[in-house]
Length: 537
Picture (cartoon, rainbow, N blue to C red):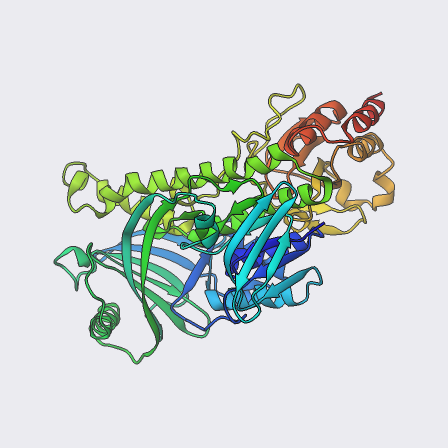
């Protein structure tokens, strides 16, 4: 079967190619650039816990070595600390990393993949679809025709794929603008992220509003200044003035020594593609959506697109088209991003509109700071990872379903589990392999060798039920899971979202849930149902 064509070699396109290769799907990445990224210290990204874990899983690189997790978060209004969060294991910090470092790690991992071909200096200029696949043409020194089974446009805001498929991209332009600088210096605080609203040295005009400082490795900091609405030209002189007055303001009037490494202007747009799928063509990342105001992290959503789409494309590539499963990518992901954009559009007038409700509601300013904090920290409606509770892949009400600490459709908690070979691993480490995960909660098993409990109690019956499922599944055992009683059985999607929790071994319910989550009956469904029935008896 023909490979999957991935158009675009940014973080989303590179991550998708890796995710597909991990599931034995060959890919061609069409990179319009030279195959390497220019170092831009001021172009950085923030990754929440789930997306940082995804990148680490794909690259094998502990990102803490090349990025930085701040020790704390502080939100200051004028001279008063409004919010302060100290990060720990129970509350992990977002990871701050230069984008060229992130793409470098992804490119290095791709270079080791036998199933991925990266075609540099290859700009897409046409594509054609037919029932059996996609044909794409690139121009450049090696311009040629490429044949693929599917094609995914990860080619950014000006996506050629989206335009060739005549998919509309409505929304708002220049929702926010920020002047950005990366510099090496020392601040009175070390390794902490600061969001400073209404700093006392900028007391007039709409540009008095907001400054953020985020640490990077080796004493480097990224500073962002929220710019007033309009098209004011950001000159080098203006940026230098901002740098000096900010450093002086944070250092009691004295400007410390600093080395300016890079500058830029970051413009935030809010847009959402009407469709994310057109037959065998899909959109992901900035080609499908643009967001990022109020501190929210746009790349997070692009990487979540990857996590959602990769296992579905892999299943279709290996086992034939599963239209309901492929359609669910747009249904699930577009709903979450649309909700994120609606939340931001509702909050923006309150936070950026001058007086507004702040003039009438006591304590409103503190509440607004809390909303802004949510966006920066990946919490609440502005930033928390979405859930697929209303997914078309949800199995519906099952007789044996029981509540646990994770609602159906939400990402599972990362707990220690015992794998089938008897080793202890993290649950998150087993994701992204294309298999469903079946997790038995069995307190006490951690102190026994696997050979003692695999043939005891309910394990043989559960193992038989798992082997009869309509899609490959891995059986794992956990000593505990939040909110789960002993002998609870969790069914988890390959992207780490909970399908259902069952009270005990219920082969029929487990089969029905597994069948629903892969988009309905498969060609081998009748045989598997017979085997599931035998396991029930």
